[in-house]
Length: 390
Ligand SMILES: *[C@@H]1O[C@H](CO)[C@@H](O)[C@H](O)[C@H]1NC(C)=O
Ligand SMILES: *[C@@H]1O[C@H](CO)[C@@H](O)[C@H](O)[C@H]1NC(C)=O
Ligand SMILES: *[C@@H]1O[C@H](CO)[C@@H](O)[C@H](O)[C@H]1NC(C)=O
Ligand SMILES: *[C@@H]1O[C@H](CO)[C@@H](O)[C@H](O)[C@H]1NC(C)=O
Ligand SMILES: *[C@@H]1O[C@H](CO)[C@@H](O)[C@H](O)[C@H]1NC(C)=O
Image (cartoon, rainbow, N blue to C red; front, side, top):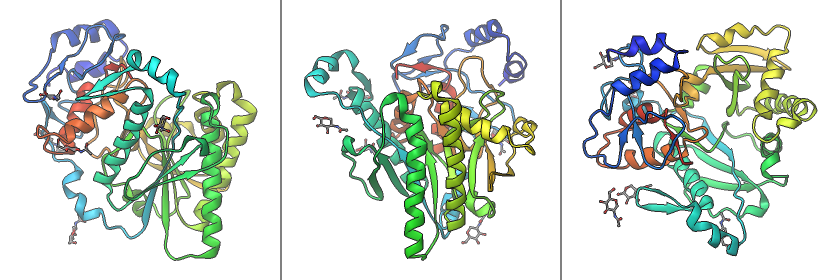
């Protein structure tokens, strides 16, 4: 599209972006209904899909879209070819629901209902729906993998799906402590795996710890296949204060990998508890991760400025740094990045007010209007700068 060069140059020029937005109204929407053009006011939150222009049009290595049709075949068409790596992969996510007592929930219900497709959800149902869609995408993209949900023993999650197990781990799962507890649960989980290994060592099972508001859209087995020597992998972006996102951590499933990854997470936990407790509600784990990595004497932070994977030995662990652009892609919001979507994107992260988009994306993917993951990625690319009602 003509505007792409302008988009990139005007990164810091908000009025121009508003102007361009105004000039490029909705593209073709065809069968997929209930969608409107990009809003002029970015602070409004929407209760339905809103599409704007797709970023990265005209860039040869970015997904090209015409309406909601992808012009590029992405790696997905070759999925079947690479899905038979030998090692098993398990996704691990920490998930808990804060189930208010029934009378409070009934009073609350009508004022907090949101509707996606034909279904209305209250707050608890909404987070369960996100978990469900998280599972759906993994089962489409990596059908051989398992999913393990670490949860508060008190939350009694009603999840009954194939290849999905719920593992209660004691801890303090209150909202304010959740990110701290999450690292503790990861460490506890890895400790249990080590104990299992000492009993039987049949085959390797790798672990990928993620937030549950992500859609896995590509095969992640190739991380372990292409990088045989790492213990723990993190995703990075070119962001001075928060270069590392804690929403995606891969651990090599060998005894050595598990042991060293666990020891590294213990250093992060210690840093969190001693330096970032005041931030414990949301960002403490990311700040602690960044501190542990950046304060390592041999680490060169300039490596975060180029989106290319690299390795570094820190606290006895071989860390693999993977670019967020591919392994933890977040829809651009406001005046953020306008570089579009790499053709080999593997994980889309619906951070912040984008949970609706996650559910809408699944519904679109599962509708007749969509011919595959790449079309759905066009929808996400065009809609990602919208803020939604949840
Ligand atoms: C993606 O599709 C566009 C439009 O058809 C094409 O010009 C471009 O070469 C494709 N990119 C790749 C990497 O195949
Ligand atoms: C896909 O699989 C076929 C048969 O198993 C193999 O010959 C081919 O090299 C594979 N292609 C890639 C790109 O891995
Ligand atoms: C469900 O949604 C479709 C459009 O997405 C609409 O045509 C249909 O009437 C809805 N059904 C109900 C029962 O609301
Ligand atoms: C929340 O509580 C309701 C009513 O007690 C129960 O039916 C539901 O299964 C609970 N949900 C979760 C996720 O625990
Ligand atoms: C996908 O769509 C079909 C047909 O509309 C529906 O029956 C099914 O429940 C959907 N699957 C999921 C997992 O949403």
